Length: 347
Image 1 (cartoon, rainbow, N blue to C red):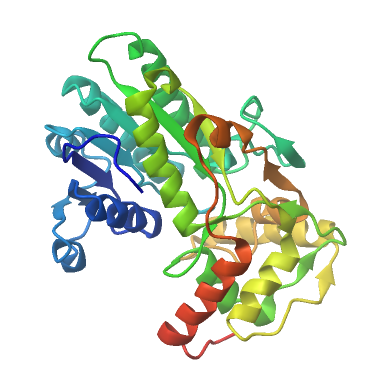
Image 2: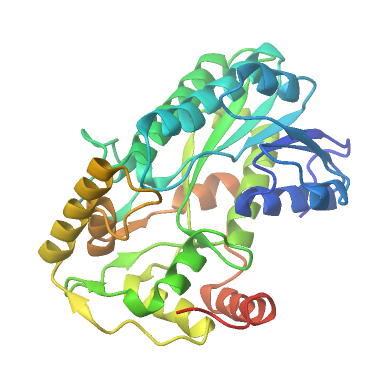
C-alpha cells in the first residue's frame, strides 16, 4: 500500500503484539515508518522487526503520555475484550486508557489518531441488519465491554470534533471492525476449536452476521490514517469495517471448524433454554467467585440468536476501503496456518 507522504512517520501502536495490532505494525514497518509499540509485555519478535517496544499499562496515564510524545500518528488498538469480568477492569482499560491516549495526543499536538472501536457499541439484543453509522447507542448495554467501548468512542468523537477546525488540532477516526479472524487469531478461532464438541446451535434461526479477515481489518486502519492526512474533514467520523458479505452464523462457524478438520455443529437447543443456562451460570460464577468465565452468558446467547451485519458503504466511499481477501481465500490461509501451527486439536 503506497504512502501518502514521502516522509517516514513516527508511529505509536498500542497493543502492537495483539492480533490486530501486530498486523498494523507489520504494514507500518513495511512502508518504512518508525514504529513503537505500547504493551504490557516485552516482545523480542517486535524488536527484531525494528519496532521499539514500550512497556506500560493503559491505566497509567503518565506512561501513555511519555509514549505518545513526539509521535506523528497513533493507532489505539489495545483494550480489554471479552464478555466477563469486573466493570472496573473494563472501565480502566477501555475508557480511561482511551482517554489517556486522546488527552496525550492533544497535549503533544499529534496530528492523527485511529481508534479501534467495535460494533458492540450499538448492540441492543435485537437484530441489526444492514444498519449504518447512524444507528444509535442502545439505552442499555448488555456487557461491560460494549458500555466502556461506547464511552471511549464517544470521547474520541467529541474531542475530534472539538479540535477539527484548529490548525494543529487532533484529527481522529474510529473504526468498528466486526469479529476479526484469520491466522494468528488468539480469541475467536481458539474458542471455537476448543469447544467444538460442545457447541450447539442456539435456536432454529441461522442469522446473518458480519466478520472481517485480519488483513482487511489492518488495511482499513492504514487507509483511515492516510485519509485523515489528505481529508481532515473526516475527523470525528466512525466507520463499520467488515467483509461486506454477511453469512449465516452457523455456516461461518462450520467453515472455520472445517478448516481445523473438525466436525460441523448440527445439534440445536431452543434459545430460551440457552439464555436460562447463561443466566444461571452467571449467578453461580458471581456467587462463588469462580475463576475464568462461564461457557455461556445471556450476552452470548443473544449474540448467537440475533443477526448483526452492517452497511460498509461509508468506509468504501470515504476511506477507499475494499476487502482484498475474500472469506474463501481467508479460510484457505487459515487452514494452512492451523495445520502448520496446530496440527492436532482437542475438539
